[in-house]
Image (cartoon, rainbow, N blue to C red; front, top):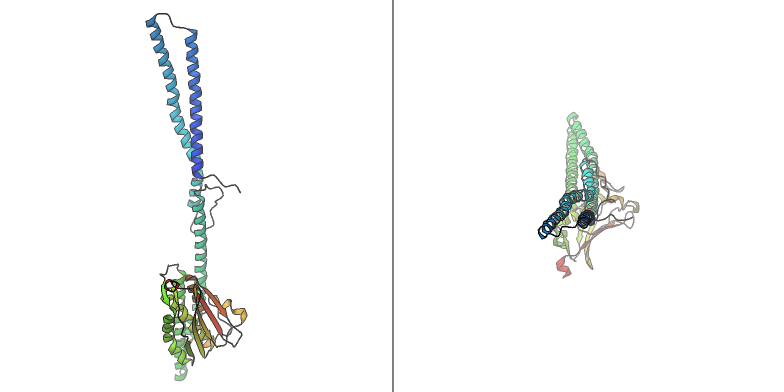
Length: 365
C-alpha cells in the first residue's frame, strides 16, 4: 500500500507550485507589455529634438515601469489566494479527522481510519486507536466484573435472609442458635468476598505501584504469622525453608499474593502441611507454595485462574471460598512482570504454585 504524503511535503510542494504559477504568469504579462512598448517605440521613432527626445524617453520609461508594476500588484493577492487554497487542501485530512472525532459519542470507540492521513498525523491516530481499544477492554472487564460480583453476592445474601427467617420462625432454642450461627458464617463469607472484590478492583484500576527491593523471606514470615491461627485450627503445619531472595516489587501486594496462596491451601485443599520455598535462578527469584492436599485435576489447571471459578475438589461448604484468590495472585504477578506456574502431580498428591519474579537491583549488583 502506498504511503500518503507527509503534511510538510504537501505544504511545501503546493506552496512552491502556487509561487511558480504566479511568477510564470507575471513574467509572461511583463514580457508581453514590454514587447508591445518596444514595438510602439520602433514604429514611431522620436524627433531629433533633444528636449522632445528626453520627454518621449521619460514617457516610455514611465509606461514600462507602470506595466511592470501592474502585474506585481495583481500577483501578490493572487499568490495569497492560491496559498490559502493550497494550505486548505493540504490540511483537508486534519479537518476530516476533526469531523470524525466530533461525530463520535461516548459509546463509539471503533478505530479511526489512518490510510489517508499524512505521515505526521498517522502515529497520533494509531495511538488514539490503541487507547480506544484499551478503553473497550477496560469497559468490558468492568461490565463482566460487575455482573460476576452481583451474581456472587446474591448467593450469600440469599442464604443470610433464609437463615434469618429460620431464626425468626423457630421456637426451639437450639435451632435458633444454629440459624444465628449460620448467619455469622454467612457474614464472614460475604465479608471475605467483598474484601477480595475490592482488592481485585484496586488491582484492575491501573494505578501504578512503586517498586522497591523486597526480601521474600520477610514477607513469608509475616504471612505465616498471620495464618498461624487458621493453620492450628485446621491441624496444618506451616513450613518455611531457609533460603531468601530480593525481588523488585511492592511489599503489600507481595504479601497479598502469598496470603492468598496460603489461604487457598488452608481453605480448599484439606492439606496437613504447607511448605513455602524460595530459590534464585539467574535474574529471577522463584517463590513456591506447595501443599499435600487433595490437589486438582490436570484439566482444571488453567480454569482455576479464572475469576469466580472453584475447583471440583474445593471444600466449598466449609471454606466459603470466593473463587478470586488465584485471580488476584495472577493479576499481582502480571503487575510485577513475573510468571505463574501451577503443577499438580495428580489428585490426592497436592499442588504446587510457583511464582517467578524479577530479582532486586541490590541482588543484581
